[in-house]
Length: 298
Length: 298
Image 1: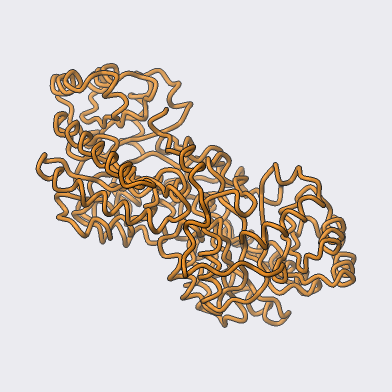
Image 2: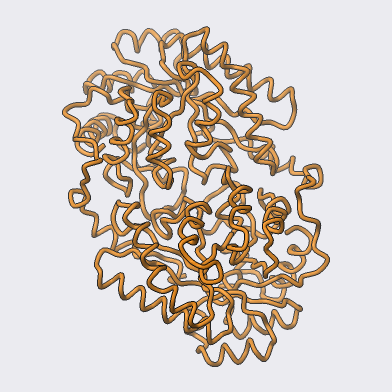
């Protein structure tokens, strides 16, 4: 199917980041003060090992996944991050609200309350919501279940001091992970709530292609509850595992950070990379590379 | 990575199309009058074989890809479709406008003129435009090159009686095939031209997830230059080859056809499926199945 292919080789060879600098781009980072290491980037490592590595390499923040929390134990995890003086930028993840039956939807809401408790115990600023896909073909009905689910858990999150961050996912995940696919859609849901209670998490992998990206980031303003960086590799093979280290793909990272900063966001910036090659990298090398690319490219 | 997975098995088992019928859904087809067989669905077959199979199975329309045209020869292809009395709904594809150098962009425009000539010779109603991706990381600049490219070829298309159909591609293709990813974006470009000259091709695979889908289809109105059906399979593996036969995936086909019909579209409906299993199916079985699913599900 040569006719389906793009001029990929030619394009990859032609990447010249410096040639595309614009006045709208954010300036380079001076240091890694805002860096938060999302644990999904080191899926093969345990939480205690990742905490140690962050401390060793001077990475100030961490984002913790719940399946890793289960392995380690919540109280122990909370003690470890406290002892390492790490900022817990978020817990991943709550959400997954749509389900066929009312009882299943109710069970999902209970699980979100548990996630809020875990985030509170860890001192995490945000619980990231991956909203869930339609349980049947009706994506419109699923979207209503998401809004209802968030409304059901938002008061509890406010009570526990945890902000909910709706993360719109790339439309490639619409059938399996999230019926909420655009920043605009996430913003419209978040606007039903106090921005301190419910915001939107912007991940470059999910939103870089959006023709309304710059406008939507500006409209989000103080609703931005988190910012995630990584890169979009070409060619795409497995779309879930297609994330790369910053600088290895096609995303205009400095352009997007410029948009984020102009919107007023000053919070931690997570590096979140699902990629088997990244996961095979020895932990120390991975954390060092993450910090280096963060400062040089993001 | 169990924590990344959705409740896919549960969902697949729960699919009950009839339970989700809505007053907004289009009624079932009575026959295959509007069916056009897009040749990409039978990538392993030659154009003469596909033309024969369409004629044999009472499929009234065909969409022809240029690489197949090259194999067969333009004049011979034109004679074969004329003899078989097939309606040529479109030629795939023109576009691919963005390039780093002005000379390469100019060469692409020349190639689009040749595609317009081929479409005119075949009596095709539409030349489908797959617009092309950014040659560097600057997707905004690529979008301008697309608009400029269409402006450069539109007068020639009008002269030759071929309508240009901008096909927004799923955002999963934004880095490799099309920086134009949403119906809204395609519409905004098309509105610079006479609707008879430049329209928008709506393919369910590319747009089913769009939260503004229904509104955008309504806004397109007489700018709809084509409608393509297939399905989105779960789980997604290779996103390019993830299309399935209508009814095998999660797309609300009747809902979307209702939107398309209310917008006023009465033209041919192409079945376009990139999928290795489909391509391995013997041609007669494939064309028979396509027609059957078209009538029963699309």
